Amino acid sequence: MTTEKTTFFDRRDFLKTATTAAAGFAMPRGFSLIRHNHDALIEDLSRRCFQYFWDASDPVTGICRDLIHGDPADNAKKGDEPRGSTGVTGFSLTALCIGADRKWIPREQAKDRVRRALRSYTSGFVPPIHGWFYHFNDVHTGQRWKNSEVSTSDSIWLLAGALTCRQFFHEDHEISDLATRLYNNYDFQWMTNGDGKLLSHGWNPDTGFIKFRYDKYCQLAAMYLLGIGSPSYPLPPDAWYAWGREPNSYGKFDYIGTSLLWTYQYPFAWFDFRGRREARGSKIDWFDNCRIATRAHREWCSTDLAKQFPDYTQDLWGITSSSSPHGYTAWGGPPEHAKIDGTIVPCAAAGSLMLTPDICIPALHAMKEKYGDKIWGKYGFADAFNPLTGWISTDTLGLDVGMTLLSAENLRHASVWKWFMANAEPQKAMQLAGINKI
Image 1 (cartoon, rainbow, N blue to C red):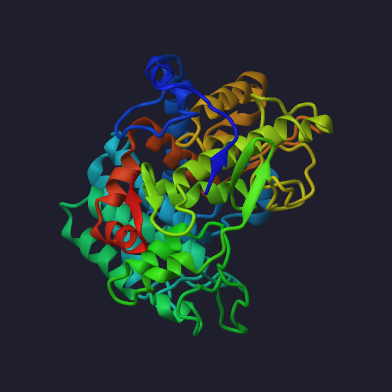
Image 2 (cartoon, rainbow, N blue to C red):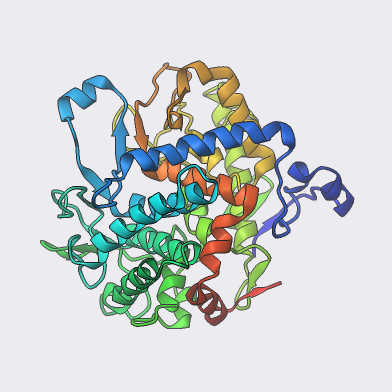
């Protein structure tokens, strides 16, 4: 069971100062935790993140690019690099719901882009493997990109985005039918590679199934729940309890998982775990677990890491998978997952806005106020930057701006949670897995 060795605030404190009291109490549905003087930054950041998806998704196929190069030298060298991402397309589909709802684009334009993406993934234009898809594909042709693997996790983000669209654009029968067809095609049993419960990380046409399984805490919550709720190839409800719940502890924080910070964000951007607890075993409150993990991460940055990198403070923190001077790097902690060099990744805090706004909003303000002239641009914050060396990423990564946008939207309006959870399958899956309302 997740615990935090401290008492934060009482009920009256929550009612007095919502952003601070979020540290101790679950958010009531529909209750905004943003104080008025923070609204402008989150609004501007959200709009810029949405612009990425409008610019990066192909207007003909609807497939979204994995990243956009910001360095003119990179663009000159690589030209139109049409590497699309199945997972980023899932975030893009969700972003189109947000953009239409906020009237950043006309609803009809958003629906057209959604239809094109869903047609690409249900017509065979993007080749399916037992209903699953390659991690990367060509945005123009839909074909497998180089030696890309069939990715379980990226296919799940696509499905989550499609189901979000099915509810938000409920009046559009084609979108509803295509999203339903997409879900029906996912063969979850095949992806267990004979195990029946534990999902493989993916499959490669040259080597077969990836040997690793999703058998301990990581980004797996949405995978197993969508598998359990599958209308055609369901996983058994016990699959939810088949993976390990490795305990972690840092300072006064006890929680489940020794994983990267983004794994406490992505699945929970769609599945609404607020006010729910497992009925079996340790009866874990997974939403609370994510909040505790975020607080532990911030404490780790501002205490242990600050001894070596003094730029990390209580208001300037956050490391998660991102671009780096040496390519894409899966770093973060505690515990440390890759050698930390003082880099700060804005989407670490931004992606946790829906979880811990009281520590994430000040972090975003601190980044913008101290480094905004260097790290703030067309799509919001730079993907990563290093105050010690002066390095700033020139690439914008779709997953990172996507998680920022979804988390901000859930914080402000709980919209993604509302749209996604309006689907019958996620509700059924949580019920079957025994994830019950407290």
